[in-house]
Image 1 (cartoon, helix red, strand yellow):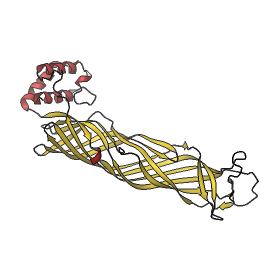
Image 2 (image 1 turned 180 degrees about the vertical axis):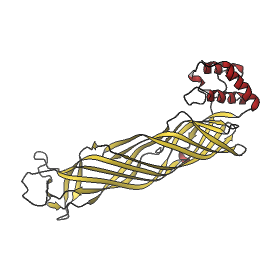
Image 3 (image 1 turned 60 degrees about the horizontal axis):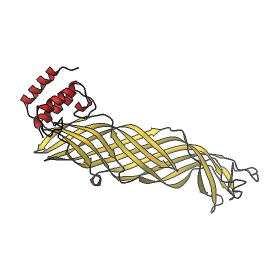
Length: 350
């Protein structure tokens, strides 16, 4: 159990040295003035087979397939054809962002602490980008319609890939940054927030999560303090890339393929693929404007609406007992930083 005497001595020395301005704020990101603007790219490679949608019972008039360009084609033959498929997309992003965080300002100490930071980069809904595939089949033939396909790449538009979620959440309890006063009540700041990114995209009828990727939110901007409120304006340049090998079997899906020799018809095929590799990249600028209000008077530790020695004793008892209530800066650890933070708030009053 920590001794009370050293902290009491620390309290006296800090109080004599200066009277600091320290305040906790609850800050919300303004969605209408915040967002992610940039570009994204995505590539996926898969392998598997294609086969005609013929079924002797349910679809006897359907398309049938057979590998190769020569040889007899049986009356009911429908044989899978090896195929590779590559998906590519690239396009702009322009989304709105919502979220919030806790902000502790120690003006005299020229520091700030951000806790609980979270941002939803797709607050205004999913983002969709046109996509196309490069189709690499072996040479094959079809019946109904009768056609031959030489094993060369075929480019096909397939609609859109949709990013249904993209969030960033702070991964550590507290991020400490620096403040530089530029005018009365105005400060430049810089802070790096350790975080993780989680996202999900939909492709060919299936959803694919991207989970817990390490992500550093490096923010620099301005903070303005006015009365009981605070406003924050900041930005971050984002350069993010990731590559995975999911080895995921995709659900069977139909593919209508225009005929090549002769042209003018449509072969109705079914694709069965395994998603081998996925690569994605995101480049852009994340900007946000946020406003906050003072949290409930933090120095009123016992909640009796008066800041006096009873609050100091109540906090000290919680601190010595390592009670979670003494986690004054919200970083999930009770230590001397909490003691100094409480002392600054106590001296400043409410």
